[in-house]
Length: 124
Image (cartoon, rainbow, N blue to C red; front, top):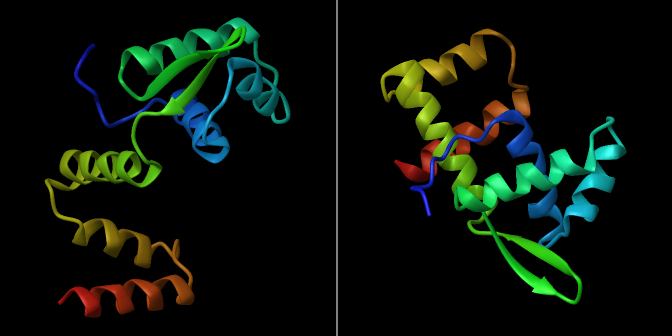
């Protein structure tokens, strides 16, 4: 198995979100969820889930006639890794410019800013 890379492509992340929400899923389960939002081929979903398994993001077991996939890591851990990679790559490891950008661009609500402030005070 290859070393796990934190950052997922948009399509990989979309699939992982479905598997995290369902906790376990077959290719058909994921395919049907994706069809609610857009057209996609069943074989594309199957291929993407195999890739996610190869990358170490999904684990599979055979149950009856279908493979059932489960997340290899919790959502919070994977998303945290993606955020760290982004901060390292874009902001040279400092989260402050990211927060400043979000605040200055009005991307955060007053409630979100208050929650961030509360968490920051608790951490210090």
